Structures are given as structure tokens and as C-alpha cells.
Amino acid sequence: MLSCTAGDEPDPVLHLGCLCHRPEVRSLARRLGAGLSRRGFVAGMAAAVSGAGLSGSAVAQPAPAQPRTPLLFTNVRVFDGRSDALRDGLQVLVEKDRITAVASRRDPAPDGARVIDGGGRVLMPGLIDAHWHCLFAGLPLATALAADTGYIVLAAAAEARRTLMRGFTTVRDLGGPAFPLKQAIDQGLAAGPRIYPSGAMLTTTGGHGDMRPLSDLPRSPGGPVSALEQTGAAAVADAAADLRLRAREQLLQGASQIKVVGGGGVSSPRAPLDMTTFGLEDLRAAVAVAEDWNTYVAVHAYTPRTIQRAVAAGARCIEHAHLMDEATAALMAEKGTWLSIQPFLGDEDSVPLTGPSRAKLLEVLAGTDKAYRLAKAHGVRTAFGTDLLFSDTLTARQGTMLTHLARWYGNAEILRMATGTNADLLALSGPRNPYPGKLGVVEEGALADLLLVDGNPVEDIRLVADPAKHFLIIMKGGVLYKESPIP
Image (cartoon, rainbow, N blue to C red; front, side):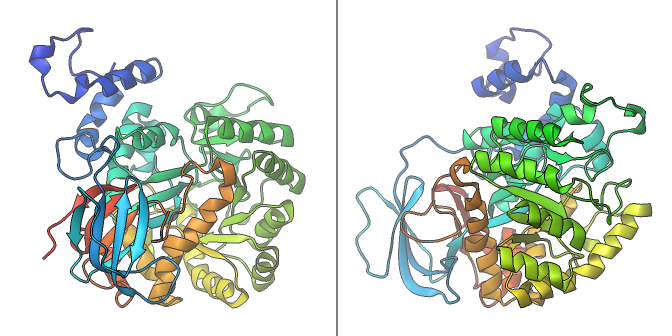
């Protein structure tokens, strides 16, 4: 029970204004109570109150009920998510959750509309992170593995608010039980970005994401799932039939795409980076399920062999690929396979690691520059993501990670990648898209996810690394989640 008292029917007079007794929170407690401990919820309440958008703060409030007052941005320079140059002297009209006009003419504001004079500042689409883990980004690994599910979800709600306040209005979640958090955000119970969820990452025994203790072994085929799998963080499948089942389970829960682990990873200490997990026919089985649901599979892969197998199986997107070679880049370009890669440059982009994980991190860092250069040389469609994990200090560098791209791209290219290009990747989910409408662009009919920037990020990309200072307005779906005074 989510309650600040032990009694089943606390006196409402004694708890006026108490978050625990808000109707939506009490409803949530009743729905989740059977599977979650009261201790876990109470431990995370402080984070949820201040961070999940349920507090009395003027910033990051839950979305107000429709209809909303029309809002007209005047005197703004627009970065539209597609072009290299800014468009000067424009006005942008937002009605409900959509942009309904982008014009240079000075039409009068609609009756009752609010007008915000941008003072010549840059209005741009909200940022998109194509590789994020909502439930695990801000929690230490030990906590993520051992804490009550209630605490994890509430802490994730706090991190979701911080993500939105960094200007990231949309994320693609590549592994974790993000469905309840997404629902709470979409219903206005918490503040956070739009979430394109994958659900549990699908892996083999011993593959990346198989974080079960050795005491769980041996496991009989078809036996009960482990405690790790019950959380929804990962699902272990060692045959095509099991993989099809697990993929369908994620789609049943609302996954917009399927995440399959094709090889080893950095944070899983017992999964060598050079290993390849699923066979070709296994991967084809997962791809077939996704295609039957009119969406796609993204495959976690670092090495040429793993990437090439995923491409041959029909995967539409490769995650990471830091160790790819030229032949692999050429194959991805030929097949039109997306690359979702993270600009890891040094130790500051990761939590401290030791032992095998440290050695694997160094290998990834050493391969980053070559991977980006190969992707550019061969014209591979490339998305931006951060994959920041297990530290709320590290997640604060989300915008800084975007500035790392200046090593390979111009500022306008970087901004396009994190807006319009990333939105093109999200659109691969087709009818499984949880947010029908145009994202990542400032144009008529697009969803009104907007940032008003104090400064010109096309000239100085470093502005996005300090969102508290430079993002004066953060809007998602036509709602102002942050509004700072405009000098």
C-alpha cells in the first residue's frame, strides 16, 4: 500500500495536501500493491514527490487537461530539424498538442491566445535520445539488481523528470520494464519524455543482460523464469521458439520495437565482447515476429561477425557497433540498416568499472572514432543515443554527450541527428508508434515538442550541455514544463 500511515482508512482531515492520498496515487497503489512492498514505495517517495512531476513545484507539472490556450511564439529564429540554416523572423502557433502554423507573416494571434516574444532567440525541436534505459539510467547497478521494484520505478520517475528538464522530450528505451512509467507520463501523473519502449532485452544464457547469479544455474529448458526475468529487465531464450514467445510478450505489453542482444556487452562481466549469441535462424525468428506486428528489431552488437549476422537476419537497426570494420559499414549502407551508436570518448562517459568490464570499456573507447568515420564514409544512416547507465551524475551529461559529435559532424548536422533524423528512426515502429504524428521537426502539423534556446546552438553546440542556463522554455505536447523569464 502506498500510504504514509499504517491504517487502511486514514483520516482525510489529517492528510490534506498529502501526496499519498491523491486519488491517482492511491489507485496506483491498489494496482501494484500485490507485487510491490510498501517499504520500497516509501523509500522512493521523496524522489517521486520532487522529481516525478507530482509535487507543487511550478516546473515539470503533470500535463493539464485539454483544451489548452493557444500559444503564439513571435520573433523567433527557427531550427526546423531538417535544414542547415536558421529561418529568421518567424512566428510559430501551438494549439493543443500540435504546431498549427509556422509563418513569416505577422498574423494576429487567435482570440484568447497567449503570446511569447522570443526576442530573436532560437526555437527548435525537443531533443531525442535513441538509446536510453529509463529504469536503470540513474540507479547504481547494485541497487537496480537488488532494490524493490517500487523504489526502482519511483526513482526512474525522478530521473524521467530530469531527462525532460535537459531538453530531451523523447527517448527510445532499449531494455527494461518501462511500460508503467510510460503510462504514468502519458496520463499526466508524472513528468518525463515520450518513451518508445522495448520491454525486456532478449538474450541467451550467458549473453549480455544475463545478470542472473550463478546460484540460479542450472536451469532446465522450459523451467520457471528467474527473479531477474520477473522484473522485466531481460528475458533469456536459447531457442527460436522461446525467442518468438519472449518477443511476443514484449509486443503484448506495448513494445514499439524489439531489442535483441546479439553479442557480449560492457556492463555484463561474464559476457565477452567478442561473443556472438543467437544463431542466424534464431534472429530471423525474432525479426519475423516483429514484422508480423509491423515493427522492427534492433540488435545489440559490437563486432563485425555479430553485426553482419544481424543484418543478414533482417534487423533494421544495430546498437553500438563500435568495433565494426569497413566491410561491415559497407554492408549496412547497402542494406539500409540503421546505426544507433554512442559517442563514448573517455572514462567520464561511463561509471567506474573494474576487471573484465573495464577492459571491454577500453576496447569500445578505442573503437569509437573509427566507427563514426566508417559510418560517415559509407553513408550509413546514423542515430544519436547516449546509453548512460547506473549513475544520476552521469545522466546529467546527456547533453554533453551530444556535443561529443562535434569531432565528426558540424553543429547543424548534430542538431539534425538528435531531432529529425532520430525521429525517422522512431518512425520504423509503424503502427506500433505510441505517438502518431511528426516528431523532431518544427513544421505545421508536428507534435509541439519545442525548446527556446538562449543563444544559437547552430553556432555553438556547447549550449546544449548546460540546459538549466540555456533552455529558457521546454515544451512537450504543447505543455510548458519549463518557462524561464525571457530577458
